[in-house]
Length: 283
Image 1 (cartoon, rainbow, N blue to C red):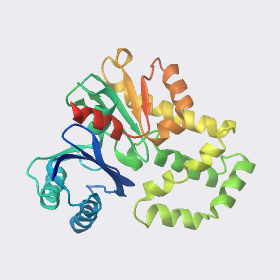
Image 2: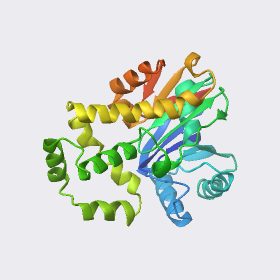
Image 3: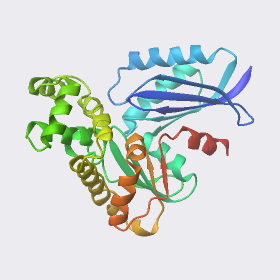
């Protein structure tokens, strides 16, 4: 039976699981449904993880589990996830970290830098090469999440229904999504995960980024992220700055321009952390 180290990159949309053999080779890799540790029910998490173990097969003996998860921001949540992982994977050596630490390790390994996430939500930290030294709180899609998919979707919807968008773009948006004001209010205020719904509108912005209004909307949001997050870390201008996430990748050119106009140079932009985490845990 092969002894393996299991790594999980758990986002709200999907979880990527990788099993590393003793020689550091990838011996198993699958995708499962997303888990937000802060919001998920214990029974649902257990069910999902048991399915993952079954898919990976019975030939593995798990010596340790490293779980980087969305929502793993407090000791209470991390302890909850740790107990589930120990139970499902039958292992004592379980380590639960925030997705922000996962992004940091993937971007910088054992080196210092400012790690940023731009996906459905947004976040950032000052990473000292081992741990998160400082964190400007994200505050979520209601109070923060500048530059995120949720923030961009919120701007798009608000501008559409307040008649700020150019007429042609507004008409195309409402027609493409067949969405009314009542639909919007229901999806945002009366259903679960409104942040995911808002972020799901980003493809429309991407498709129409040629339009000066939408280009400016994205540039403003990304500039806001730089000003309200990156700029808050001491010595930010002299440190490597890395970004992780789909929004950072999709709007890379605009992001680099927004950062440059504030005097920052971005060193690395990655879509997902797993390959970097594999390298980190091979050490």
